[in-house]
Amino acid sequence: MKAELLVEKAMNLGSFLTPDAIQLLETLPDEDIQKIFTQLKGATVITREMVAQVLETARPPKMKPEREIKAPKMVILKGKDYPSCGGEVEDFQQLFRSRYEKTKSLLRMRPEASQAIPFSSLKYLEEGQEFRIIGMVAEKRVTPKGHYILELEDLERRERFWVLRDKGESYEQVHEVVTDEVIGLVGIKRQVGNISFITKKILWPEFPKITPHRAEEEVYVAFISDLHVGSKMFLEHVFERFVKWLKGTETQEKYKHIPPKVSYLLIAGDICDGVGIYPKQEKELEIADVFKQYERAAELLSELPEHITVVISPGNHDAVRMAEPQPPIPEEIAKPLHDMGCVLVGNPSLLEIEGVRILMYHGRSFDDLSSEVNVQNPCELMKLLLKKRHLAPVYGGKTAVAPYTEDYMVIEEIPDVFHCGHLHVAGMERYKGVWLLCSGPFQGKTSYMRKRGIEPTPGIVPVLNLKTGELLRLHLA
Image 1 (tube, rainbow, N blue to C red):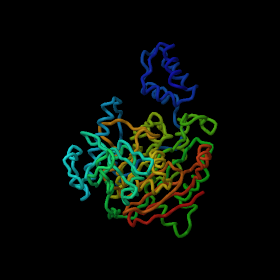
Image 2: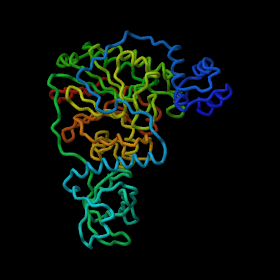
Image 3: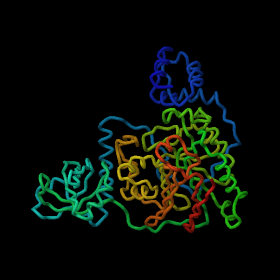
Image 4: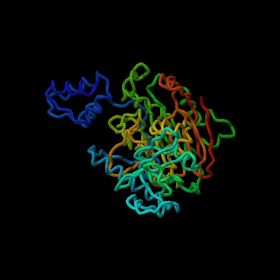
């Protein structure tokens, strides 16, 4: 039910709905909404907590006994929670100021950018003198003759810079530049038209090749995403094959030693298909109740071997706010997952498992980035995020951003493993010592994928040995 109808219905009963109560009610079927309003009749204010309490008493979970949380060698370094934040203009200003300062510090670690000057000093340069600056990209545009103009800003002012077609390196690089990211420029002062500066080279924060951390014992982690439980296209038989593989009942003889050593399962978002995520979604839903979707997901996960710790972060189909970073899926919505001992974290999350650092991000920003730079390959997109040191560099597209005073989407620490999903196309590659793992979905081709020409690669699961760094690719579909 839409927000306007919920507010009207509450007002007719003499009640006021808080914004977070409306957000929760929008995910519910009409029959549940009617029960809630009946139960809470006479309440002056209806809060999210009141709605959740009614649901909890009305919907006892049905599943196996609780699983004990067994994660003595796992630490949540980032993403344990992302509380509510403001929404004023000043909050967004502080967010982008944080992005600028954090990325500037990372850029200054590069020798080429360590002596970057403020924009206010550019006016003192002599003709032909070289400069180095760091700024946020306010605009990128191309001229009729094929040259590019980059408009950058620091905390004091804006300035425009040429990227000329005949200037080799910078012209090749400019195609990867996106608005709202923070970059460095090496250039010279030279008047061309009404612009005084020419770019010779573009700098990103990037990072040198790393020596990845390794576990002391032979421990494996399986990486999956995009189950979309509740969808008619959910490939339950493929997921069941995965469970059987983990139990060792459908495992090739040469891999029989691995399943008992798989101690962790990381799920990078979209565990359920959700409700009201896109127009006419109800026609493609097998389970049209978001609570029952999570109940069914818990039933499926309860079949996993007891020794496996399950870690779940949300995606854009899960029942949390769309703006990133996303908090963990709340207990009142996914209580069955909480009750069975799953570890629910935010999106993104940085985990340390057996000494190995794993960055888990669903990948919603891929939609914006791929359209900006014309790249579709999942590993190439993941490389760009690491290169830019930001998980959602493009602002104002499909990826909503929560205006915290600190930009939590900056990649301040390079992980040993970078795990994503969302694209429904699997990809696995090493990049400068980092394992890039984009897991395949457990959902078939939807109407949206047909329109976009997307060919999903379901049932492809990376399984990583944390001691040796060796990767096994499961093909289950």
